[in-house]
Length: 147
Image 1 (cartoon, rainbow, N blue to C red):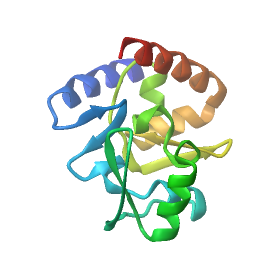
Image 2 (image 1 turned 90 degrees about the horizontal axis):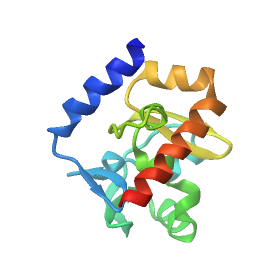
Image 3 (image 1 turned 180 degrees about the vertical axis):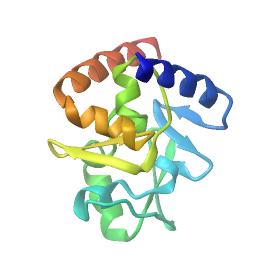
């Protein structure tokens, strides 16, 4: 119950921050997933900031990459590397909330990238991945149908 209340409070708070839901992808002034390179999560298992000289437009937002190799990998298969649920917090999505994530808090599961708004949210998700994933997929599909 406390987790649901916290997600609700965070959802309300983020409603007033400058963020964009462009093509159902979380972005801010730094671009998609706050300018982090989505390919780096998969290849090096950690977040790395992308560079302004290595960018690509996909789903209406700018994606940044640490080098041209990662950019080419993304262009070849963006859905393989882009975070699930548009880069929004996977745990919050499972609760039916759209909450921006912190790219420094992530997990790779079944070769897919998931981002979270806090370490507690990631820890909760990791304890019950299948349940959270099913709920998040359902919430995501409803969001897509509305937009």
